[in-house]
Each structure stands twice: as structure tokens, then as C-alpha cells.
Image (tube, rainbow, N blue to C red; front, side, top):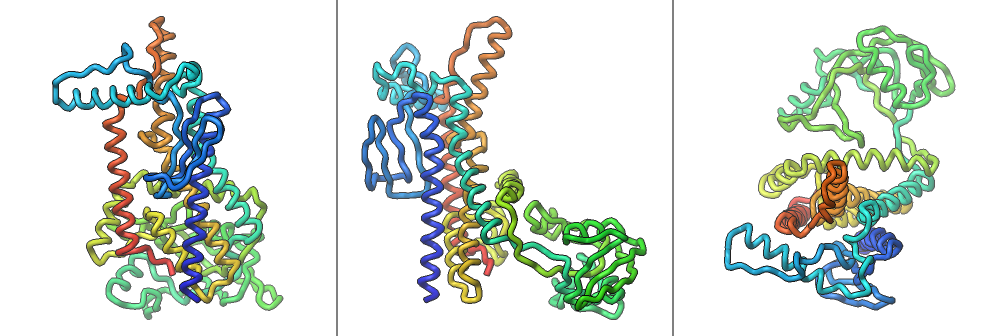
Amino acid sequence: MDALWSVAGVLVVALGLALSIALHEVGHLVPAKAFGVRVTQYMVGFGPTVASWRRGETEYGVKAVPLGGYVAMVGMLPPPKGGTVARTGSTGVLARAGRMADDARAQAAAELTAADEGRQFIQLPVWQRVVIMLGGPFMNLLIALALTGVLVSAFGVSQPSTTAAEVYRCVVSAPDRQAREAAGEDPGACREDDPVAPAYEAGLRPGDTVVSFAGQEIRTWDQLSAAIRERAGQPTPIAWEREGERIESTLTPRLTERPVTDALGVPERAADGGVRTEPVGFIGLGSQQETVRLPAWEAVPTVGRQIAAVADVILVLPQRLWDTAVAVVTPAERDPNGPMSVVGVGRIAGEAAALDSVALADKAALMLSLVAGVNVALMVFNLIPLLPLDGGHVAGALYEGLRRWWARLRGRPDPGPFDLAVMLPLTYAVGALMLGMGVLLIVADVVEPVRLF
């Protein structure tokens, strides 16, 4: 039975990923057709064509490897200068790059017909080309917002409450905790010389609900946490409820080192590999989690935090990939917040679906969350301003617009469209790096997978 649930989880996420890719390409297709560009192909996947059909001037189809897709539009590149491809006997790097660009221009020109005048992608205004290329990432954003909206409004989100789940007996600083853990000791065990935690000393116990702190009514855990952090060393009144009775006391938050967390609340790593910390007020109180249903529009800040987290990963992607490679060949564990392939996402989905202790609704919520997260990653990654990604085409169009504006400002002739063919060597290099990244992540997800359960 567990195997069936695991397979079901993998299939659900695989289907969600395939639909996301298909809709990403629809995001390119719709504005391209709206602006009059002749679209020759709309394909989901790469490799041999499994099935295809023609509607009007466009061939629609599915290919054997469903790990991407494309929309083929005529006139992506300008024709060769003079209408012919020049050949030389030179074998230098620049000459080979020039021949590569000329071949690409010639191939693009061979697709054109007399009826394509004015219908070529490169003949569109810059803003229309930008809209077409941003259509794919924008579709991923809409999918992420829609799925997250369903999650927060129908399933609810788990968030900390003002009710205590734990009240620590003592204060153990982050460095001491790390040192004890490295020595094989229980990092949470109290020693005789450890100071008593302020909350425990004041009389708070698990199950108590904090209702007031520093004279202010407390409604959320974030409100309480922020107030505690700011009052290190200051005697502060606190009130809580226990079995309907209000209890009041005074405590003094201790100044201690606590982990710095990122946009998703995950502890950040310092340069030495340890957890980054900051000095803040601390009373030794752990919160109970509660599931709260929120309005659907709360999906916007939630997705915003996910975008920031993915962007943070991409900004240090070489380091994250290096850490992943190290984890494959050494006993080091994978960073659960690092990059992973679709194999890793599918594996997590399968493991989660097979958990007997998790309710069906929670499994469904996790599946939606995974697909929403994949769409956020697809959107952010595709916006990287490098060809062959969508962001590279947007950058090329914007550069062309800037170049033409500068020529007009200086009274110079129109320099014409920016020829992306000259970027083909870089495009192939980026493509090779992306392929290598994919292979590394797939190997890592098989050999040393991220373990969340």
C-alpha cells in the first residue's frame, strides 16, 4: 500500500510539472499569436516527437522527454547580410563562431515565406517581444499564486501561536549548543552552571497562552517574538492564561545568540558552515503550531517570500552546486534548502504520500505546495538574463531598444535589430552548463537525496 501511495505522489507531481511546462509555453504562444507572429511549432518536451497534430499554421505536439518545451516562431534572427552565407577557409575560434551565427541566420531565413513580411518575431516592437518572452515566466507566477491561494484558503497554513509548546528550563547559547552537539552531548540538556530561562523562572509552563507583554496586548507569535527580541536586559511585565485564569508576572529577557533565518524562516549558514547568529532578547519559550485558513490574497506575500528565497539560491548557485557535489562524494549531508532536480522533487512527493501518520488532506496540500514551489523556481530561473533562457531574450530586446534610442539621441542612423546569432557560442556554453547542472542534481537526488521525512 505504501508503494502505491508513493507512486501516486510521484505521478501527481510529475503531472503537475508537465502541465506547468505546457502552460509556460502557452504564456509565450498566446501573445505571439496575438501580435501576429507566425508560430510554426508548440511542443512540450524534447527529443523524438511522440504525438503531434496541426491546427492552422501551427503544429502542436508532445515529445519523448517531458523536461521542457518550446514555441518556434519565424524570424527569431535577422537574415544573413546580403542574403547569402559567406564561407572562409579560416579555422580560428572567431571564424568558427561567425560561421555558426551565419548558419543559424540562414536556417531561420529558410523558414520564411513571402507572407511572413511583418509577421517575424524580430520585426515586432521591442515591447511586444518583451511581452512574448515574459509570458512564460508570468504564467508560472500565475500558477504559483493560484495554487498557493488554494493552499492558504482551503487547507490553511501552519503558523506559530501564542500558546507555549515548550518552556525551556535553561538558556544555552547557539555557540554552546553547537559545541555540545559536536562533542556528542545532548545540546538541549541543562548543566548546573546554565542560567535559568526567564520564562520558566517567571512561572510559564507548556499549554499557557501569552496574552500581554510589556503592557501590550499580544495577538500573534510574531508580535510577541519581536517584542522579546527588543527588550533584552529590561524587566518586563508579562501575562498569560492557564485554564481560563489570568496570571501575571515579570521577567527579564536575556541577551543571547539566536539563529538568523531567511525569507522562509530557515536558519542561514555562516562562512564557516555553521549557523549564523545575532544577539537578541530571549526568554526560552517555544510556540505551538496551529493551522489557520487565510484569505486567498495572502498567497501574494507567501509567493513573494518564496521568490526571494529562490533568488537567494540562484545568486550563489555555483557555491550551492559545489556543496551538492561535495555531498555526493563525501559523508556530508545535502542542504535541504539547496537546488534539486525534478527527480528530487518527485522523491519527496513519493515519500510524503507514503507516510501513514499524515492525513490525506495534508498530503494533498504538500503536493500542491511542491508544484507551486516548482513554478516559482521555473519563473525565477527563466528570468536569468542569459540565452537560451527567456531572460536572455528579454535582455537582448531591451539592449536593442536602448541602442536604437541612443542612436536617435545622437542623430545617428538606426542600427537595426540586435542579432542574437552572435551570442550563439555563449548560448551553447550556457546550455552545456545547464545540462551539466541537471546531471549533477539528478545524480545527487539518487545517491544522496534531500531527506525531509
